[in-house]
Image (cartoon, rainbow, N blue to C red; front, side, top):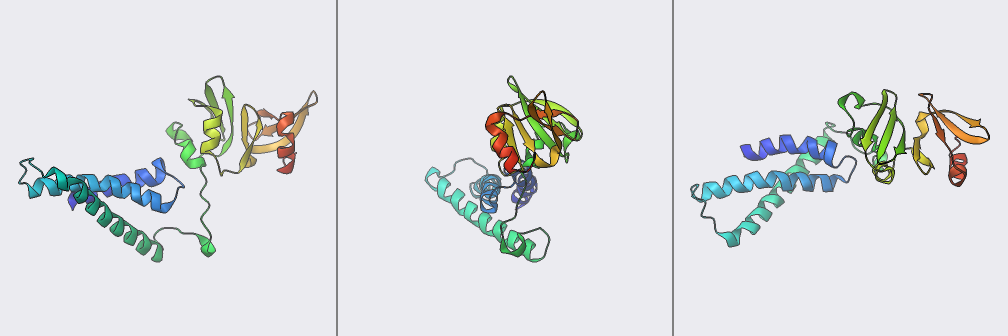
Length: 205
């Protein structure tokens, strides 16, 4: 019991806030259950064998699955109860909750960027420059991977090397005939011809 409680306290926040932020609640609970079942499984096995280590190998998988199933039931019941008591937020009006992927993405940056407003990301060779209201930071990441991680965020690709958040745009401008989006930080993000229509459709120009 103590092993399961300690594992839940550690695994729960990590899975919900860092590993799988914004993902299906069932998936999050299943991952937490799988993690916390392991120390419980070890503790029960050690207790049943008198800490001799001579465990019946044939029974080990089924024993783990039984513990996993119990963990899922307990975690699911606790989650439903917490929702009913208003201890955690839930979808409004029966609609799925919209959870922004931005906070999870910003976890890749140093601690000072936690809770920052994301303005844009731009590709520089093998690195990605992350533009926020608290400054800029370079991280080792491809733009394509960043855009997959930011899928669902309110923003769009404006250039082969730029993704811009709608709330990060201060104004649209032109420089020598080239369309630009000026971020709130003052940085100008280019808009290429192939993405110009998407930018117009987003009412950013």
